[in-house]
Image 1 (spheres, rainbow, N blue to C red):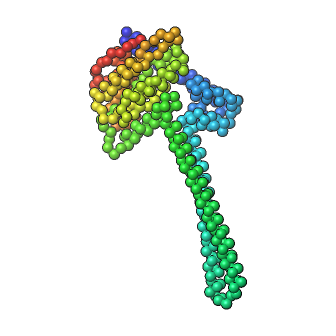
Image 2: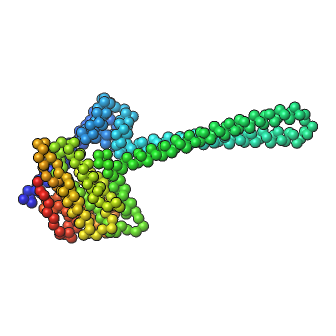
Image 3: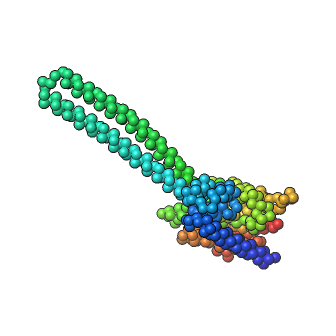
Length: 362
């Protein structure tokens, strides 16, 4: 029975790999046919459009016609907040901010020039008065009128400069908020609302960039068993709803200071702090039980299909010197869990964690 299950999982993995390869070839062929530039962001856009995961994006993409311009491609990527295009949004906003700052600098320079011109005029008039104390009242009044008019012009220019500076600062603040929103969008999974793989890797890197090496923390990776067949049997919309409900359960199950992200189509990763190997195993059991007890999916005839199968692998920071080494350890443990349906939770190294838990197998 165990060998059959393992063979079935290997077969499904091979099917996923073949489907992914076929889609990549389809993307490359489409881009060549329609003369779309080989930019990384274009590959992501075409991939998302052809994968069928985002109908709205696919419709917008199809409306571009045979040879879409780079500008039109980028507009669609920005509209649908693709990760590769959110960087473009940030660059654009930073460019706009730089332009505003340049205008402000010009306006300040002009204001300084006005003040310098007024000061020189004032010095000239005072100098002429000192040199010629016998000047007539009419001449003095004319010079005072000139100073009064120059003062009025200077005050008006100061008021205009103040308004322009205020407007410029408001524009910069707005651009700063937009940049932060764009940055947030690059680290958020659109479907589940959880942090995405980029956010997770940033968090993992930050963990290892501290002055003190990380300790007493663990990385868990959770994978849905045979999610491809669930999508095939019940449809992609049902699969997406399942992922959203799963994300909700995970969010409620972990502690506030722990971190969960969706790092792949049906893979979720957790960073747990202040835990030992036994704690990590216990938390994995709790996650597994929470999904079994709270998440079922129905067939098209309305009957219950059963609890959702999960495989969970975990590794400890104490056993890894680098972020990617920790991730590799957790993935190795996950592969061990996938290979043994009767023991769906494995730690790294596998021989260290011999506990066994049962689970419902549909």
